[in-house]
Length: 479
Image: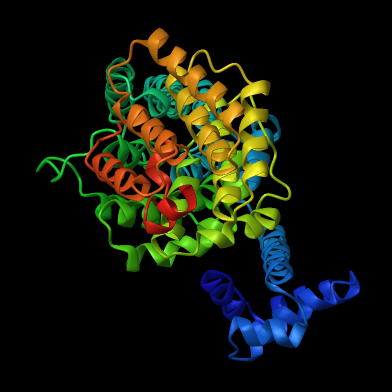
């Protein structure tokens, strides 16, 4: 909300009035009133809800729609230099055929400078190809030929970097589900390849693309306690990227990638447990959670936000609020079952939100639908973790038959997988079996002892257990 307030406060009078009038004319009076309250008054959220006569969910929806309207307006007002430059590049042949050679050459040189500023490699190759022809009979022909060849290579490097970034985050999803050393090794190799490609040229765009991988890799793959002396500190990277975004504030790619770097700032401060600073970025990322999850998986592993948000709410003891918030937050979320790791985390998040609101049957439905709709043979570890959470719902519901079926299925999967990292699964099964046992007097003590054992285990992959609050209330709920 803080960022929305800042944007509204900084709108020019003309822009503010235009947005307000547009909202009123489109019968969005409440959004218009919200805009006015934020712009002209210093009011708390609770007071604004009272004035608008809306509940929390309706207020959240209003904020979302208002933010979307403002972004659409600002984007419409934005003069895209990329669009302007593309038009100029498209008219190059007209310039060459209709202008004197000196004027055509000067025009192309000016266009070259503008394209270099915005790092538009594809378009630069067209300019250099044309300049090379214009100077066919002069010594400059060789210079422009060299520039043309260099930018063709640079254009290919840029395409390669974009493909590698997307491949990295696809592979990270596979690693996240299994925690396997072979997957980690593959990520390390891919990271080095991206670094090498991005170091071929001094380019702010390549720097931004490598930063996406560099920060994420150091937070979630190569998690060293202290950074190497030859590595750029993550805070410096974030500041440099922010400066690039400010310098090229009309670049549409950078405009859209800003939310990814807000997410990375949030994860950076979460990693070092500086939660006070992390809160600065939470609202903005949470506000765009559905969009981040749907549209940005070529540039980051966006499901991580759901897990971080879950841990935050558990830490703040507000996990019971997630269920109702999800109805608004994911109202327009586009499910993509082809991206299996993302879909697993999304369904897990919806299921555990139901669990924390004591809607155990609905939680079980989410998990059963996932297991029925998707083949998880490629992700046996994740399948076991999902079934483990499902068994917990049946345990709480005292459904002995379904619980036993689920546990037997887990045990079969463990035997087939021959994995060595299953101790936490066996301990959690013991917790649930103890809860369903007959000896009521010793249940709490035995369960607490097993829970304490779990706290000392490192789980190197996706697991529901990591995000469960296993306190006295948890034990009381089981017994």
